[in-house]
Each structure stands twice: as C-alpha cells, then as structure tokens.
Length: 241
Image 1: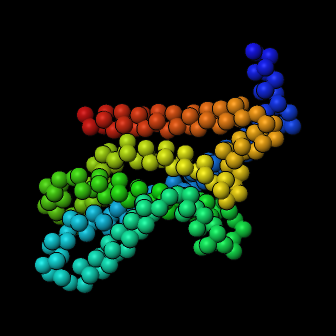
Image 2: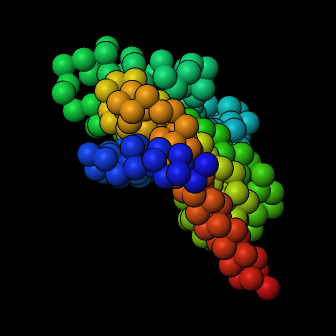
Image 3: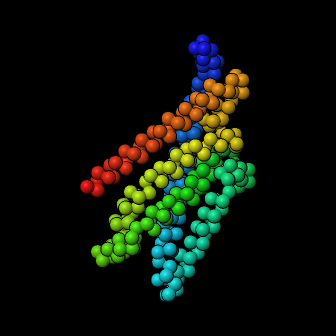
C-alpha cells in the first residue's frame, strides 16, 4: 500500500515538476483573495456606513427633509440595490458577467476576478458592518455628542472601536468564505489552486492525490485564518480589562 501511495505521489507531484503547478495555483489564489479582500472591505465600510447612518438618522432627517435627507436617501437606495443584486445572484454568474460582458475586451482575467470577488465580498462585509453599527446603543452616540464630537468624530472615536470588536468573528468568517469562493476562478481560465489540481488530474488520470492536496492546502489556510481570529479576539478581550 505504501508503495502504491509513493508511486501516486511521484506521478502527481514529482514527475515533470508538477508540484510547481500547485505552487503557481496557490500564488494565484492568494493574490486574488488578498486584493479582493481589500476591495471588499473598502466597499463594505462605505456601504455599511451609509446604510447605518440612514437607518439611525432617517426619522430626524425626515422631519426636516433638507438636502442632506434626499442625498442620503439616494445613496441609501443605490446601496440597497447593490446589496440586493449581489446577494441575490450566484458568485459564478457574477464572475462570468464581469469577464464575458462588462470587461469582455479585457485580457487581464486575474484583474477581472479580483474585482468581481471584491464586489461580491463588499456586499456581505457591508451588512456585517451595518449590523455592528446598529448593535451599538444610541446612548453611545449621545455620549459622543455630549463630549462635543460631531457624527463623524463620534463614529471614529466611540462607535468604530466597539464595532470592530463585535464584528471581528463574523468578518473573519467572510474572509474564509472569500478564500474558498476563489476556487471558481477557473471558470474564466485562471490557473488558481483548484484549476491546477484539476489539470494534474487530467494529465495523470489520478483524482485522489491532486484533489486531496488541494483540499489540504485550503484546510491549512482556513485553519491559519481561524487561529489569527482567535488570537485577535483574545487580545481584544485582554484590552477590555
């Protein structure tokens, strides 16, 4: 049995330096995830802040109905449409639309994937941020106002530090989901980790070894993110004391 395992290992990874295909795919996966994560967080913070600001202040603004109310209402409507469309359609379909329709003339499939995954992740990050802000008691906002802070300063110095602590586990869960979702990048010809495992399988006609290797690498990366999340949570809890 060990001889068969050793032979399969050599066939799938050693011969023709096929292990380098796995390494190349891993680099592509990490690049897509890292850039998409930055895009998603940036979009999520903006959209989540707009949505929560509108929800918390709409009653006061509705009574006055000044220009700020209509401007914020418009931005809130745009954000709601964005969230509805992105969360209501599959990631694979969004990826294909970006690659084959919106950026059909582009030859940079990696950049298209980064943008598509970032836009998708931004919708979920936005709801996480909005939920975190809405969970903060209104007394915290009033305390900030009593200290002479305006709304932006109150958010920055009083609310956001509490929001980060509250949403950190959910946010890391979204990062993990994003990492695993990049496995569909092969649909637009990107040689990511999953695609490379499949290419090895097609050349060696051996499915077990390359698929287990891909699954194991994803598992290790997810475990690393989970460990980082646990460490950050413990540090935040210590800072509360």
